[in-house]
Amino acid sequence: MSAPAARADRILAQTRFEAVTILRNGEQFLVSIILPLLAMFGLTYSPFPELAEPRINVVAPGVLALAVVSIAFTGQAIATGFDRRYGVLRLLGVTPLGRGGLIVAKTLAVLLFYVLQLVILGGVALALGWRPALGGILPLAISLVAGVLCFVALALLIAGTLRAEAVLAVANLLWVVFLGLGLIIPTSALPGAVGPIAAWLPSGLLGDAARAAALDGAWPVLQWVGLLAWAAVAGLLARRFFTWSD
Image 1 (cartoon, rainbow, N blue to C red):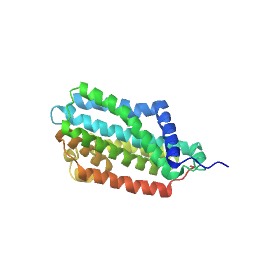
Image 2: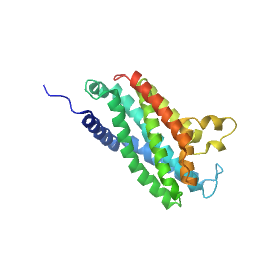
Image 3: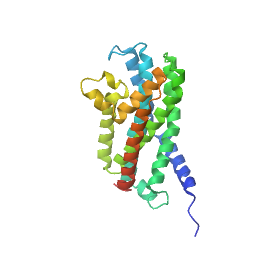
Image 4: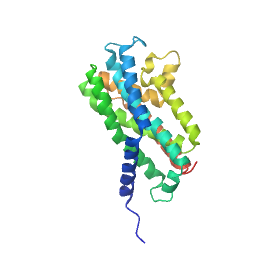
């Protein structure tokens, strides 16, 4: 009887499978690229809400943050939820991959796909006049990676504990909620007590970090710590409560 493959090999094999699945999924393409593009054009050329000029400099980092939520959270939650429903994950459950290996593989696959998103969305933003601070490119990249880690963990927590229909509803609802709570619009511009609350939610942490980096070249360490804290808590809960079947 042959021994199981090394852990790294198992994770890389699952990463390849997850990445190919994302690329073949038309709905993922719609949610992850088309909708952020529509948001970019709409917010850049609309006079509402009121944003600093040039608007694209504020909109672009928010759209890149929205793309993270689209692929890492909404896309992964729905795909994983229905994989549970149709028994795909149950088959993985009898392999040596394990919950931890699945989480790592899905995260790596999302990071790979996000590179494609970044090329497309970033290229369009540059064509529209986006000029990020040169010193902010590295902290922007760190912010986006921290966002991916956070939102994949949240997606797997939801997808691994709720029924597929509930995952579909919750993932789409939270996409809309996150959109209005700091992803596109700075949390400082939100009304009343909403802004301070949103600033500590994953959406506000990611949106504010991306804007601080791209606009000012800042290193938003506090937001990174917040995102990683959300990722750690959600990841631990996912490892504990994730079930392989619906």
